[in-house]
Length: 209
Image 1 (cartoon, rainbow, N blue to C red):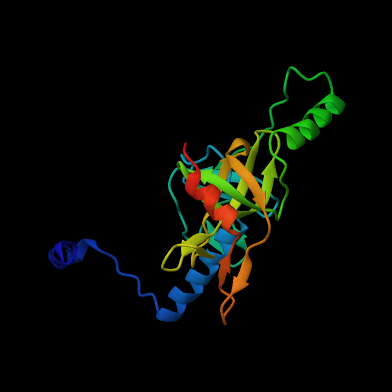
Image 2: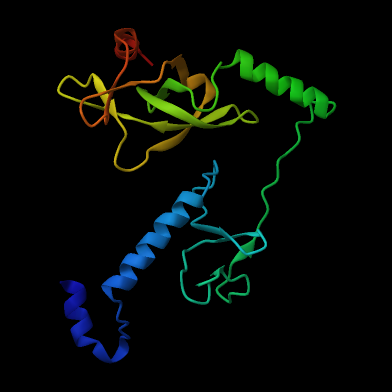
């Protein structure tokens, strides 16, 4: 209401742009589609806006801008005057490794000894000192992390699990993968609720950070 009162008093200095419900819904759908295409990158929370041009060049901006100069029907315009900076993601070589062959062997060893889990495995993982069940969607052996799509506990006794309405995907350390479990079993008429063996529930309850 304060903003409305201010706007009424400052009408001469304000430009209004009419956006129809159809335009709003179309843009909302496009934004959701773009979000699905964005791959999370560890340590980039300070980067507010990241995208690529038609040639795959990665660009960033400290504040978001979605004007027509930046984004049009063809996607992001690399000639936008809005101050996007070109950046590159560089993988730093490990100076302790003599050659690529040794690096490959070290990565294989890391996968076997640090945590024995693979993409699409269901696991019990620790996040923020609590245990959760999730599915591994990606692994990064270079920094010993895994990308987990987490489920949430549900039901009266919190002994069932379901997928949240909004995806909850988090990168966690390999050491925070406590165990690999069998795929949760669908239950109920709709098949939206899942159960896990009692020993898994007991292990989660007994965990102490």
